[in-house]
Amino acid sequence: MNNFIDFTGQVCVVTGAGSAEGIGFACAKILAELGGKVALIATTDRINERAQELVSAGGEAKGYVANLMDRDEVEKVVAQILADFGKIDVLVNNAGLAQVGQKDKSPNFDEMPYGQWDLVVERNLGITFNMIRNIIPTMIDAGYGRIVNVSSVTGPVVSASGDSAYGAAKAAVNGMSKAIAIEVGGKGITINNVLPGWIKTAAQSKRGALGGQNTPLGRSSTPEEVANAVVFLASDKASYITGQELIVDGGNVIQEFKGSDKDL
Image 1 (cartoon, rainbow, N blue to C red):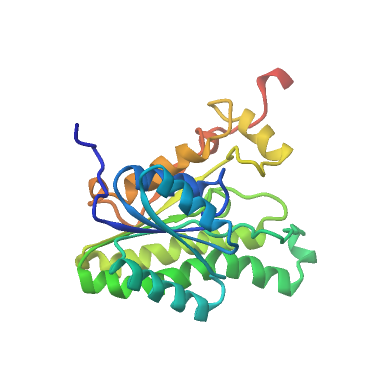
Image 2 (tube, rainbow, N blue to C red):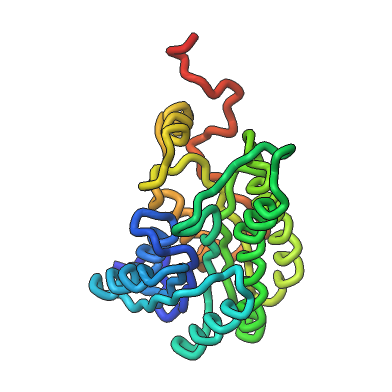
């Protein structure tokens, strides 16, 4: 039986794929299951464990360790992936939010340290820019490419106290993507953004879990549910979609009252 979506022969790069329970690895698993050759990137060598999981399941994958906020490292890792696989057809920009071994502080804007602002923006906007900037030339040369950024509803659609830097960065990713979509639309390349809401991962907070319970669907999403949207936009089936945002949040942003009816 033929799959509706098929990545056979395509090389797919997924950033931020180190966590076994995260969106990045969920994307990588589906891409590999659908025939894609997957290059996984993370900041620690646990990425090699994720790659081995895909290989053990019958896929073709390789892990790469890199700090994607460092442009020299980005250039080196992209060059190595091209040397190993020969091309890059798909880029999934999932890296951001937080890194292993680093705690995120969320001060209100009036107390925001300059360094914290710079770090959050660089991690969530800078990494995405760095990866696209280094990979899109090879896509232009090939006349084909799919870029999907894992953005967030936070910033482009909603926000909360302490999210000024994160929201600004994620909104900027969407704005940047629209310009890129116009520039490369005639060169066989599309770029889109998936905007998750509350996600049930190993790192989900009590606040996040409560937020998920108060969505119209009554729960947080799984990483796989977000990954399904990413993989669709990364496929040939989404060939006439570019510069767009796909919200995956259980309908949370459509409701005016976000509490529980039990509280009324």
